[in-house]
Length: 404
Image (cartoon, rainbow, N blue to C red):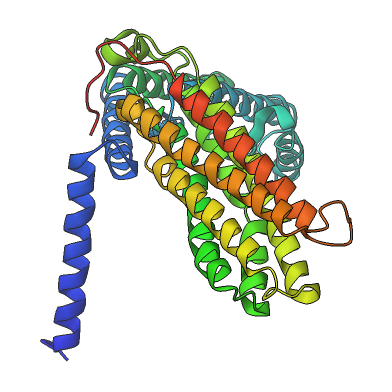
């Protein structure tokens, strides 16, 4: 029913989300702004390519140029260049297959079947990557163009024109991507580290209150194990984000301007990411030991040890909270805060070791969880001390200002 309150509420909610999305796009350099820029640049590239192919060249299939310009518009200049070379190779291969078989066998059904077979087989060539499907696409369009031409000379010209239009489209797409706000996605490295740090923070924040209370029930420890062991996808995403950040520097003229001039790589971020990965593995081992504690140990007898462990994890939670807000523009102040938090965590780890010694826990018994818990606490402290030192040594880019 028109005017239904539920529909109006849904409409207002959708409008509010849209307004918020645009506010984020205007406010800071994030996913929303990247999306707007990519759409805008693709529109510009497609329009220029259409102008050249249709208005200037009067091509019979002018859409090849704008299609190519949009297809190779990627999130980094490096990826645009890489994909354009693959795409051009795929199109040339498809047109070449059609040219050879078309002129040899004519526009017959059997010829088309053979063209399809060879083109689809060539599309599996690993060197073409994600552009492999374009071999068959180009071959099919080339066959259609071939059959519509009347003379051999006209057919050869039309097939050559397809390749020319693809070259024009790729050249226009690359030119627009390089000259019109070339993408600088170095923030992807920060976002990747933040996501992993936030995952650790959520886990620590869930663990230390229950440890302090001595509530190691089956549901809690199983929940922790599941969360600790299902981080593979997050790690893969973090690696991809770091790779994108590194690629954004290749062939990018913005790296020579202003705040980006001093940026040469992401070795520090890579080291922090590796430390966070190792920390996640240590936490998984720690949680398995806590699960073993629940099954085999008297937690009431060693409640002081659990409290000491809770204090240690709470101190690590302070570190992960700071890491989840990592910002290169504020790295100097954040490094000082991380250093203070790391010192507090070292004190808590020392208190944990002292508590284990006072309680006379069987740390050397491999069938009991205490030794593993203390060892993993030591390893976690080492990783967080290391990444704190790395963040403190991250290079400052001269002249940089706020990017949000």
